[in-house]
Amino acid sequence: MNKSHHTEGLFQKLLSRLGLFLSLCALNACAFLTDPMSTFDAQGPIARSQLNVFWWSIGLSFFLLIAVGGIFFYAIFKFKAKPGQEHLIPEQSHGSTAIEAGLIVVSTLLLLFIIIPNLNSLWLMDAIPESEKNGKEPIEVIAIGHQWWWEFQYPKLGITTANEMHIPAGVPISIKLKSVDVIHSFWVPKLAGKLDVMPGQINWLWLKADQPGEYYGHCVEFCGEAHAYMRFMVHSDTPEAWTQWVDNEKADSTKPKEALAINGKEVFMNGCNACHTVKGTMAAGVIGPNLSHIADRKTLAAGIFEKTDANLYAWLKNPQAMKQGNLMNVASMNLTDRDITALVAYLKSLK
Ligand code: CUA
Image (tube, rainbow, N blue to C red; front, top):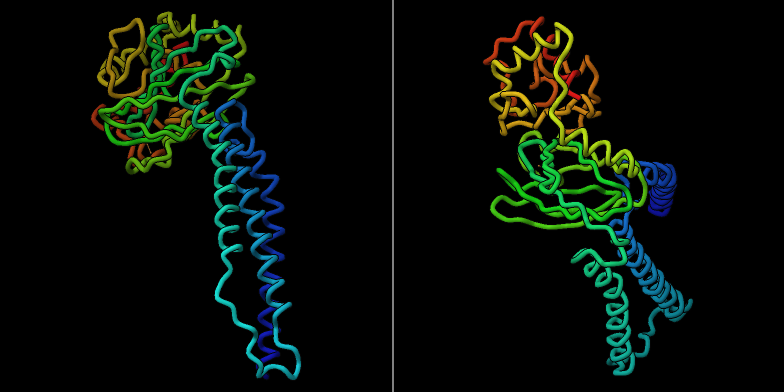
């Protein structure tokens, strides 16, 4: 095999790989638009302005790629040696002040151009504009990062919940970020973020969801063993659903009525209460997630499981098997299978 054959084979290989890559990209194009954590599906003003910065940056980069690449290929073909003239040295020059000055001016203009959407986005993130309030007071939330779950407090409403944050659609939400241990990061790709959640420092952001819906959030700063499982959800509610949620969260948890659930409460008050709070009972622990109205939540273990009976059971039986690294300690409680079944019944009764 001679050298040119070899290069041709390589070239064909590269082409087919490129074709495969491009088809995968095309397939992915659909996936990244519909993914629950897609930043391309902005559902609020902050995420939209961030997406806008992305598109302007990509557009400008693409323009530069085409322009520089075009000039490059033009030069290759225009100035290549003609047949029989390979020995000739082309005419040499020592630069052109006009071209160099022109390039500096064009580069500066392009930079100024890309600063506009960036500054727009920064100003938007810096404070909630009156135009976004629509005459409504922003809802205040304190989001607290824990290894490895999220606490959400609504200081003006007297509500504390965990891992599933409710907000009214179309109303700006003012969020203070705190951490009780290490650095986490708050991100709801379709709404807003990312912002670090620091111990000993309060960071602030605001967000707004245009429409009612469910949005996925994730911790995006490596924070230890279960970092990858530190998710959360944002439920954007209709005005009626929001009022109903607030009223329910403000109230005490419902008292268990069935015998099994009542039994589960006894088990709960014999250990679980040390770390968890259930509003209206003796349980007032603050180390683990507040479980006051856990029956109304859809997920378990910081958003990583659907909250089914089977998953609740499996979680109480062996949390480490479900979410490696988590800090819930059930081993010391020596729970029997019957205890666990009773606990599941009790947790399901906490509306
Ligand atoms: Cu918390 Cu990563």
